[in-house]
Length: 188
Ligand SMILES: Cc1cc2nc3c(=O)[nH]c(=O)nc-3n(C[C@H](O)[C@H](O)[C@H](O)COP(=O)(O)O)c2cc1C
Image (tube, rainbow, N blue to C red; front, side, top):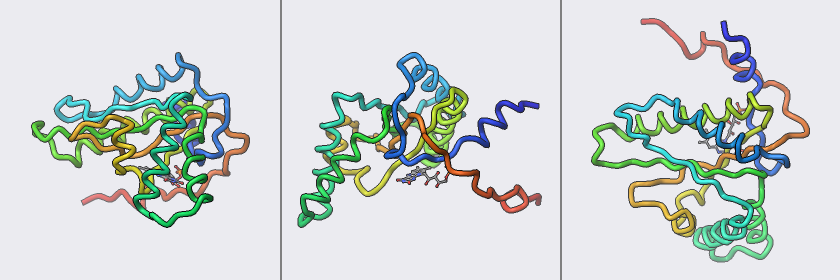
């Protein structure tokens, strides 16, 4: 029985990045959260993922990349939409980008690498939860934008999958109903 683990798993829930406030994890805590990622299952021991922190002094650059991405998608977008895109870069006191590293030379299908990345992300979310930090994920149309790829200096076989925000939450949504195993777990 691991009641603490079950508690942290149940207590974790998505908090929108704009609702994540300071304090976020300090560098030592973030290091411990990042260490949890390395415990993800990983077929072929490829480490088919990495994470990039976007520190405060890089948020304006991220905002500019979000605006570039928006303008490519919608060249007619107005000032308000641009300002909203820029503002998103400042959400969450601690902001990390999850990157899939899909080296085609590795004889493991992309799907399995994505599973490994998902496990690594979940490990980090639960590790943060266990340290009383809230978290949330954000993705969207801009994830594959050239401006973001340039800012993150992604390699040819790398893909930004989502942002992970860590921080503190004033109020956490009540537990939502979760399907029981009878809805998704069967026996042949
Ligand atoms: C890869 C990935 C990307 C996500 N992107 C977003 C997003 O852009 N915006 C958002 O509100 N939630 C996003 N989420 C979070 C889900 O909305 C959230 O997990 C879902 O509402 C279930 O809530 P829970 O995590 O509290 O169980 C994302 C989740 C995953 C796995």
